[in-house]
Length: 84
Image 1: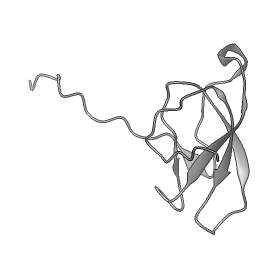
Image 2: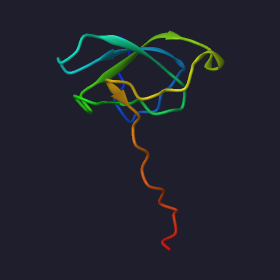
Image 3: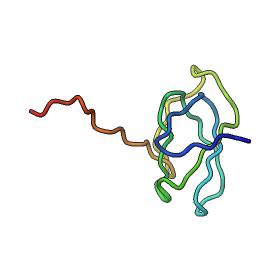
Image 4: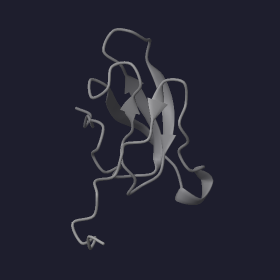
């Protein structure tokens, strides 16, 4: 049984991931780097899931860029920021 990941989870391995949306789009793939965050869907938001299909070396994976369907998961504000 495959592990399924959601937006905001940490990508466990660099590789090609199957992307399944909440019924508005057919399955597609995305290449993601280890230790980054799984992206959000522009249409279904948190209702998108990812499954690793093939591991690849991190040096062979380009950094994730926003697309027509996926956008980078926003990082939380740092709890260590000092108010000016």
